[in-house]
Length: 191
Image 1 (cartoon, rainbow, N blue to C red):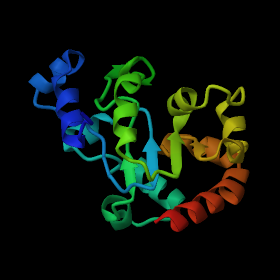
Image 2: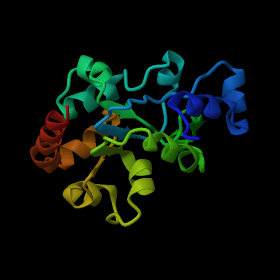
Image 3: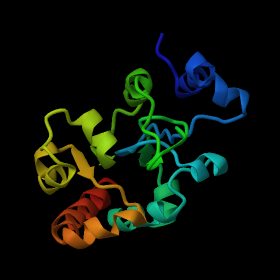
């Protein structure tokens, strides 16, 4: 019997690996759209996203929407954009930022969710963790992988839109000149 989106959501909540979150009343944070044509894969929700139970509603989200060329209303309400991070829960704080997504989480939950979204034509891979997971034959660095983004279609590797990446954006003007116009055109076509 084929699982429904609701079956998968409940299975994630009831997974023993997520018991600590479920006991604390924290739901898995992702966004499923049956008719999605665009999928966003990132690391994991931030602490603030998890607390607000809303994905990408921060400075990084503002920048991501600008990169995509969409309004907040289009991003959240178009019915064409799904968000499936590598982990649906905030992983905690590490020595130099947030901890990485838990190992094995994406392997367990991405395939059943993606099977319910057969119309996805563009997958944005946000940051190194998503790029490593979905592009095993990538370039040696994230910068070079992003520079050669066209080689990975229908995946589009991107750096994280965090304000902390201002230096990277300043050092790599080709990203705004070459990558973003193509991204915006693809997004507009798929919306």
